[in-house]
Length: 406
Image (tube, rainbow, N blue to C red; front, side, top):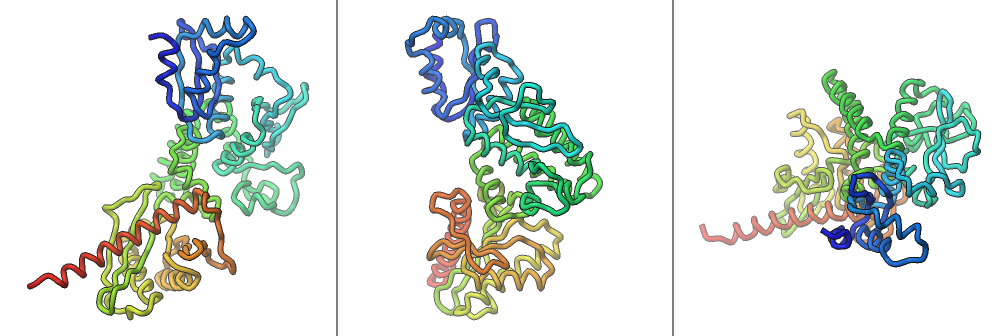
């Protein structure tokens, strides 16, 4: 098949493309917001024989799709470092672009720089887009926290409280543990992602075997995040951003939402829906007929559903969700917290008020208000709406059943 015909079959999605010769030699690696359009643009007739000569060698174009510019940036740079295509030489040798620099210390710093020629630190890059580079580095920092400050102070910094630094300044981490994070970052930047993934899998299995379930869950979260960094599952991107937005202790892979639906005195119901990695897990949905609470008391009905749901989960020793969403405002959130505390259940809880889509968090006097285009808000809304739909469906079923002749 002619190379131009192959280009027509490339996806319109973003990603990294790899141009190869007929002998499978990697000639050029690039990133694009639209793979088909970007690769096609290379073959538009331009001035300059060097470009024309290079394109004559291209016999194959392979690609790796990505969902964000951050992914494409990291993957492109890692592949250039790994494959060393000679037609990327201008990018590799450029001194005008920013780099990622990692210092050679017991607790290395990671930061963006334009390093000097005689630098003894580890240098990665260059990266043409500074804004995208900062965003990509932030994503990596959420997976493998690191130090960026110049001075080792005696007090913890803001990054430590945001779980984006392990706190070497205040003795919260050993040199061995800290340098493992740095090793993982270096391997990601040099394209050795398989080594990172295998290392995390081994540690996760070892922790689970030793019944260290919190550690195992932490390694699982890191595995998910590395997978997202390279493969770009859209829903799991929402999960990463939601963790950051709500300052959750771990990735909210399993999210539950509770909703109440009332229609008259004797026809009030509650619903619990479960989302796993951003997708509905309908086999885990549960519905409740309100038995004790007054149908005019929304708080009491929420309390009844939560008590029945989480008491049973406690008795059956089941794993609790990573996040619980309550449909309602600050009062509904307070009610949920009281019920969970009385049961000795520790689950991160938020509520979402429909009128202005405000997000209420425990111990916060004011709600979070996301922009309407925010992906974290979209995920919360999607789960809340599903809980509302499921409750309404059950209520309709009961109402129709009541009207049927016996």
